[in-house]
Amino acid sequence: MRLRYVPGQYEYLQQHDKAITEPEKMSYKLNDVFKNNNPLHVELGCGKGKFLRETALKNPNINYIGFEKSVKVAYRCAKSVFENDPDNYYIVYSNGDIIKDVFFPNSIERIYLNFSDPWPKPSHYKRRMTHKNFLDVYRSVLTKNGEIHMKTDNDDLFEYSVLQFQEDNWDLIMVNRDLHNSPYNEENIMTEYEEKFAEEGRHINKLIARNRG
Image (cartoon, one colour):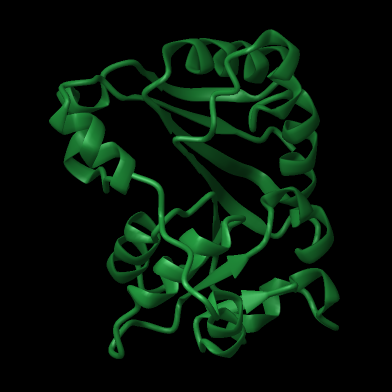
């Protein structure tokens, strides 16, 4: 179902304590918004924020930033924030391809790619979030041994991504083609899309790739 446009969505994000807009125009890096030295994890494409919020609640000693490029979706993510939510996460209304500009080099310990657009046409493969061009950007902001955690229901995208990581000399420390029927599911936190796909009986792929530095 397509989300309805609500007048004033961008203005709402500008005034929200948990939301950041136009991070590329800030006079400081996004790492500094937390004012501590806790590990930093970033989700590219956080949707309505279920995964971001629940993961932050579960891990209070880790800082989280979720990027969302749709103003309609980012607005609903911000609207889902509760008054008693912890201060270890922020929503960023922006495209995640700017991360090299808004974070310090080698400062992110983990990047989440949850159900990214599969871009199924071969002519669009360069837009896939696991294309080598993006992997080079991730490597520049990840710490040594930093990780990328990817989940998708799209088998073609998953197999493509496995190959991309291998060819780009990442260490694949987990490749799982049926997450919900594996031991790894015990610690799994589902996204909104993932809940929908699980109800439909679709299997979920997950990989973890480690930066060799």
